[in-house]
Amino acid sequence: MSQNPRIMLLTLGSLGSELHYGPYSFYWWLISNEDQTILPIRLGQKVKVCLNNNDFFITIQTGSENTALLPAYCCQSGIYTATETSPTKAISNIYRQYFNTCTCYSGYQIMGWNDNDIIEKLKEDIQFIPFNIKLESNNIFIYSIGVSSHEKWYYAGPGFQALLIYKYEKKPAVFVSRIEDKKCIIVIYQESTLKKQFIGNTPNQVWEKTGQLRKFTSKQLFGLDNSITKNLIQQYSITKCTSNDWDNEDILKQLFDYHLKRRTLIGKVFLKVGKILKIQ
Image (spheres, rainbow, N blue to C red):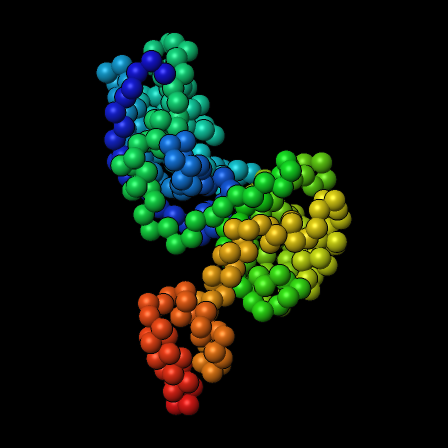
């Protein structure tokens, strides 16, 4: 790109559970080229950029029909409008129509995804930052953590969700692995539509039912052998304490170490308070 245009963020956009924490969430997050920060692609984000003395507006929308759960980019300038699957295609398309030239612009830059001020705004109000795991050539995207004491679930629990992009019946598909209540579930999506569902008592059982990716263990396919996943499960387990745990010194010590550890005396008081609350 020959110019270094000034980007103006007009609308921040929003996060949505179905998009940013759903079966196609992998496509609603990106890794910043600046500091490797994971950023959300916010629905409704709108920017303005001036190129060659003309204003161009790009808005993030959702696709339609078989791309309904994927981001789409609508670029508008004057009488010209185009919606594409990437901001690069959108801005370059309209610029070409406007000036009859094949100049290509970086959609990444046009959206402000390399602007520190815009990046900080985009990171607001994020409850959980998903993360990606590489399993050979496959991506496993963890977008929700849940914990339990179930050893055969590798201590993951209800609320845990991960997705894997692979093929099903020779077509691109998204495999969502999740834990609900007392079941492990795998749901296969194609073109934004649920195609198949498998239910089992353990990750091993449910992945065996799919007949897919047999060279890997279910622990790998759920993303549960990854160090980041393990650490998050451990942290969530530590912070999850009920009244039934108030007389368990091991759990209380973990809570103390995680949240409040300052001095030995305070630690002793913390344990005593737990016992008093249990009696009450």
